[in-house]
Length: 284
Length: 292
Image 1: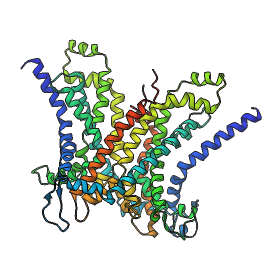
Image 2: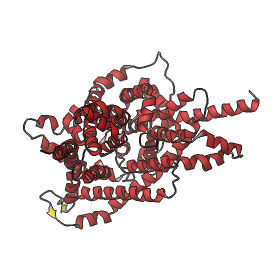
Image 3: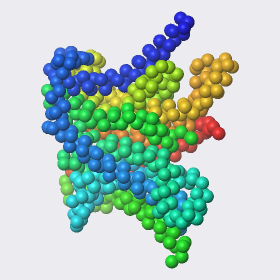
Image 4: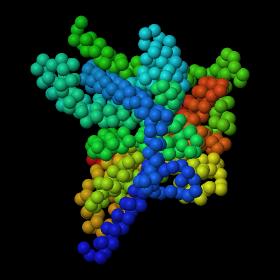
């Protein structure tokens, strides 16, 4: 390697590393601070914790007294409901839009698309009244009212964007496929489950991914529509950190615990994640 | 029943679940919100009275509303271009063929594993006046806490937002870069184009559809930002970070709650989002080079 080239390569790594620090530094400090006794932070900035000094108690305090364990559980339940709901409603509607003929189809499709133009922040306070009223319904009231899993999930069980995404995938399937399946005696249900869904899997997976991120990271709705019993982890974090200064390691431990699930997912599924997140962003 | 009727009925049945959700939680509350804005809530309780458009007009003329609007627009104008520029920088740097680049790419994507709430609480604690490491690094110990400082609080909210979005920007823009053919860049190099020229004359034009997407989606998200304000500054200091979404929440669920006034803010947010999307698309359409 010539001297000049060596120089250049080193420069490239230096640039990469400086940029990487922008990401790593806050996350690194999150971990270090979660293990440091708060009094060690008072005097000067501390960038290192020696294994002997590490204070692990913050984690158990965050998990138990800070309820992070329960909040994570609530997030898992609500996220599962929303992802399942969005995928099912989107696939069903997309099938109708792509393969069936009925009056007002185009109008209904436009209706689906207009839902993307109304931000949830515009309508949430009326939805809060609606959910509260749902709590008085006979039989189901306990499951769909204020501060219930159902109440947290209901407004997000359908998505215009998702229906659009899956419809595009269905439309790109060869037309002959439907005819061939019909010749084999496939009805709509069998065609949907045996042919259309398997072939549209990348788009459906992308939708699932969007739904997952949207649901897991939600903040405004769980903030206003739940109390401690059904609080999700994103909202719960704000309550842990309101503790006193001598509990600051607990707040950081809570952040680490809240971040672990997605970091594991990112590392394990990075390729699939990148492919899914960029669906629709880049012309294929 | 004829086959056509059966098919139509099936079609409606399949669309119905989604339509029920949209009707109940998007269209009904949208109309209801607009309607609520026509009624004014007396200051000290009691039944609200019909005031027609007066409340809308009064709210839109008020200093509080204008401040919120200004703060929200400023927030979008700050965060979107800076975030996307950084995303392009990261994507270009992360696009090189080097040993170990995969590790860097994972790091550059890492903020997608955080959320705006995680990022906000993290930086809130790092900005803690007594023991936050950022407070110490910035030498702000004897001064007003960053998040209470009229000038810095807004910058901090923007900074946290940009930081949290970096991972997604990197992923999306990287994907756009992958679509730029290497042969084209190689041809430009052979023709004697330097790195900057290649970037602005070859890469950027081919990247523009991706950037258009990023600008549109980024702006829409910026106008809907809420969690960072709630967790970092609660709209303060002195309403300097009181974005529209936060004003809607504190008005609609305040003490006493005022849904009528909140409706005026909400409808403005709706109108702006709608307008912005249309204008942006129109404006950018002409500059964007579509390949193929």
